Length: 54
Image (tube, rainbow, N blue to C red; front, top):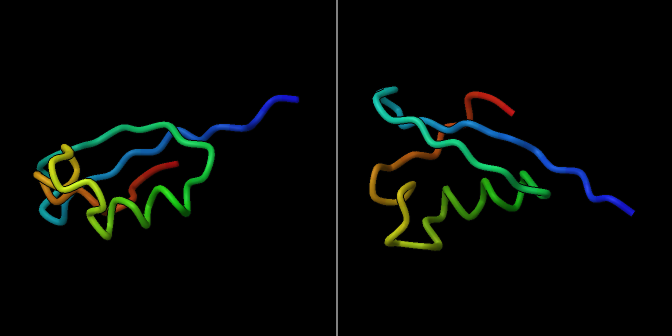
């Protein structure tokens, strides 16, 4: 049985940085980005948490 995946693109609020990711649970992954659960990650460092495409 295959699991579905989602490609998503995030940006910061000034639209100067893009982040592209792949996940099987978009809602959970967005919570991880917004709560900055990984403080040394790219998305935390550049405050990338605005979903622009999935």
